[in-house]
Image (cartoon, rainbow, N blue to C red; front, side, top):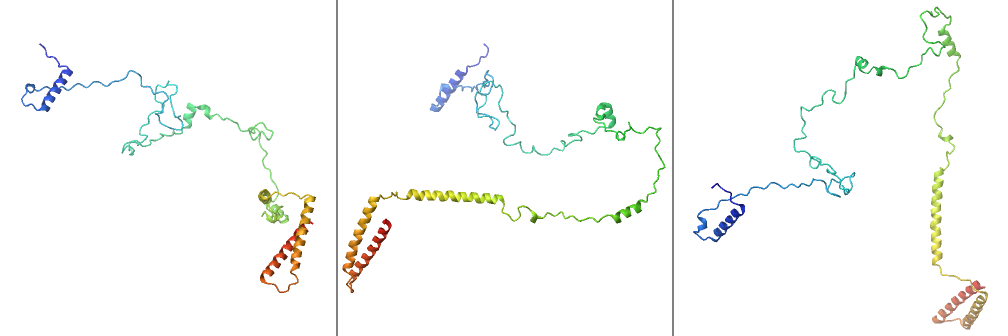
Length: 290
């Protein structure tokens, strides 16, 4: 018979039985004659789903930023990550990576190019040498059709008897002296010199308007806190006036009853002073109502 492999569940059962009897410490046992062989189960391959690894719908697990909303892949049609992974974005590269490398230096003309020669331009791009705008000839303003021809001989041998040195000296002697013009600005000749600026008048007007408004509020508050006043009718005024006059006559009779006494006690003296004060108040009230 060929060798056959013991199933995993049988080997596991034997292992559990051996451990059980070993823990009980039976001493000699038939189960310990042949020690069981330890069977290490083979590691199963990692499970991989057949469903494509698409990003989830309406996911919030992406790099937050100003250009990305709170939720991404709302429609669910994305096949790759919404925000690509960034290498060494959080903690940077490993130590020693930023060290300068002597082999990676800037080479000649790595960021620019050499200026081509005229010969190379004529050969490669001759249209660059063509002028975009032709300058007008200086002979066109003179009425001529171009530069003088070879057969046109200019007038030669012209001389002048004018003495330029003497002429310049005479012109300088006869010339009027120049007047020195003072270019300094005269600030005293300004139109608004010494006057109050317009913006200050505006500021003063604003301040006065604020004061008037505050005074108006105070007046309104004072008027609201005043007790209500009603004008007296004529009959009521006459009745009050008659009553005051009768009260004054009564007080006056009381005051005149003790007027002949020259020596008064303290109590009499205080009574007379009180009566005089009441008479003066009644006279003022009668004068107001009269």
